[in-house]
Image 1 (tube, rainbow, N blue to C red):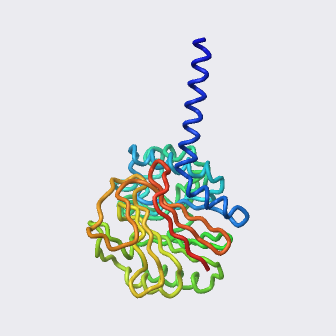
Image 2: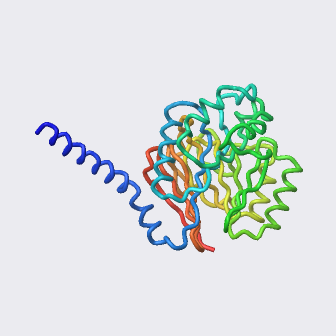
Image 3: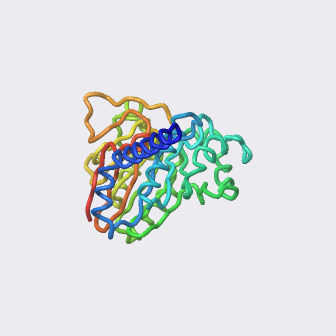
Length: 296
């Protein structure tokens, strides 16, 4: 009898867990079901990750849960500040393990790395060298292009947005025939996070002009929030921010003037399906918070 009761309780618990997992993804599930034939891939985007604390581990679990549920994740893009507080001191720095390899050990995807201001404090060349040692850490150059079917990601270095990089970005954006052109960087062009509001950085105006002329979306970190800041002023480009992949969240200026914000840890998932591209924010447990869909 005791064994039977234990088996029944175990079954009830298992069913409860399954119900919780499926219910918390209900809206995402509905979208995927309605676009089964058209779905290509999902891409995870998150910045300000490398703290090595429980926030980072919990977000990693949320990403794992999402990708296990959708079964269509193609890659993860790390939007800078990959290792806090001062980057790494050398190629054998233990932080590569404690703040990257271990937290994401259960996510079998390539992780495309971008530089952030905290990464620049340490050995930046070590990031490029570590690409040769890790099976998932990917950073082929300081700035680079990742092409997929219907969508192209332009990973830039906002800590050193020099003339070489500006010319490269203009050429790549103008010559690429991809349906969706998405530029990724660490520092935002537009945000309402209190500590980054109206922050200026070297090259921001030049980047804004390039984005407005050639790109569809700009996604960054740096602001420690999740945010759809809306369209950049006098521009068609929309700014998304995913800056709480492990960092301590901050607040936005109130009253809020953007489209959406979340002052806690989480990540952004981008899904391409037919004519549509969908941006969906999730909290660290994988709960869907907000989504925006565009069509072309």
